[in-house]
Image (cartoon, rainbow, N blue to C red; front, side, top):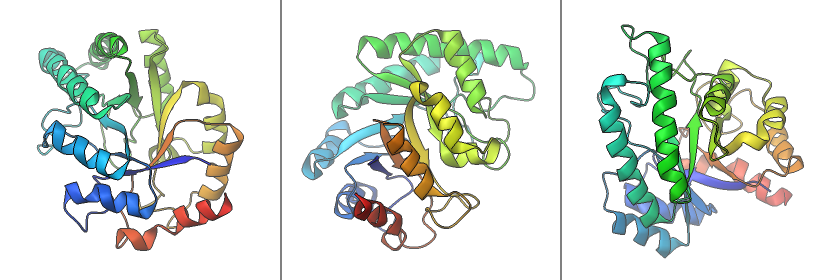
Length: 262
């Protein structure tokens, strides 16, 4: 059975953020992730994890000005020093929270920046970040995000581009974060792709499409996808990173159904 985690940035918004840890545990999740931890003290987050017996599965490196529309800075040549400071900050949080994976957002490629320059900057930054994380026993994930609906201009928008990046960096410690929602939009053929890329996948996230809501609201057959992950003996976490169509608990039938099957 896949190990399911809840993304607390998107789920359980009916309660304050720090109360979402208990809500996730009560719903049956054993792991949690969220976009960014940096607005909270490390000891505060660690305490919530320990109180609920939850695993901190993953979070993202600092993305630049998220509220201002930035979606990562790893491809921006004039932000390298800021990127490196962010990596150091993320490592500190990961150590405090016993989080063994961090995700790097490549960022939006400015219209004024040549693609090759953005790519070369990304390769150099990911190579440097991976060296720092590997020394601490932390895996670096890199995510492909769809450029059709959610993030037009996002540099890494297909699994093939992430795989090219991993090859360019040349380290087994860099893994693909495979998001079923984003890749359904960009590629489809999810089960076959999961089978082909599984050795390089470090983390999986999901939401249904269209709408980015919970399983059962769109076109993805999650019963088949989750069963395929079982057949493939995937050992990593599978994180619910969707926007509930209504109250979070009302949309968790997929989790109860899968638990009943096992």
